[in-house]
Length: 120
Length: 319
Image (cartoon, rainbow over all chains, first blue to last red; front, side, top):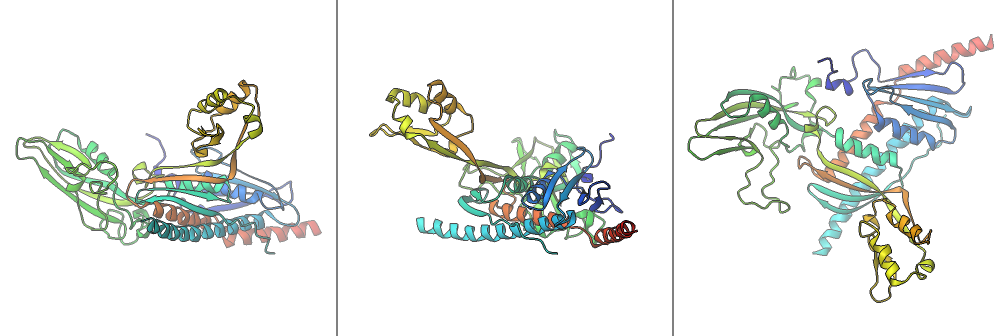
């Protein structure tokens, strides 16, 4: 009866920004990114990618509530970097990794077809 | 202020590919990427499915809603889905399915005129677009090779019963409704690494070896009939059940075998509904994940707002 519409899970409402950024008021080089209409898929890959960054002291994500369709990513870095820089770097690295994965897969698919042909 | 790159370069090895099935190895990445790809394949790669049904005549035993639901679950060939628009953000129409960019129309007309029960199947659905048609299972060599397979049964009609309807298929994702999920199953497992302590193994009698090999519920180990040596028959049959480890301990031989999961190596199994090819599903999943990442990039106004705030902060700090 009062269940939210199914599309609420992935359609960002008008007037709401997809990503918002809030600096921590007490800790320097710490910030929280609020990402609307995303879940563990994005949250976990970003967190793990941030963990490989040496300048990141803390990176974590949470899905505050299953019916609040947003995630919070919290990042604290050393003074050598900034949360925003680390965040952008993580996205760029993941993007390049996926580019690589796609070309790798397509090449392997072609190689596999050749292997398959030889067997006959 | 460009940082150092921490990019990885994953490797892929394909084992089997068929139209609706694929098995491959993914290496040199972590579980978060493997799981993100799995999640995207199941819930976010778009397909086309019937979403709106207008029933003109229905004198069958099933009610209108029941038939509409069954129609929705029929898998449709969705090669076009990636290039199609979602009707909610289609400018060419108001989303009522009158436009070719976001919808495909289907017609169904069936009437039983004799004493034999008439099966209304997915083959009775007439599509307005020849690239978007119900998946055809009848000519596939795998599975049922029944010659009189006529598609997916929607309803059965007896003499005098009739069904006439118009249906509109739309692009959607599994997150919205499972009928749009292109995946039948997508799973991945960590590749197991099995190490047998040969020295300790040789202290066992043949009977003990047999007991050890048989303690595994799946056939992971075998015994060479000539040498009596225990060997790894199929490492991937191991289900991480710890039974052989417990057996070794019970025999007073802890450390007889060591099994650990390789944290950066995954074996994927992808099976689709037939709507898109398994290999295409994986490619689409990568593409969708890339689009999602692109959408979460910081917009320039957030950056500007922070820079102003930063300057203000600096002023305040500087006094």
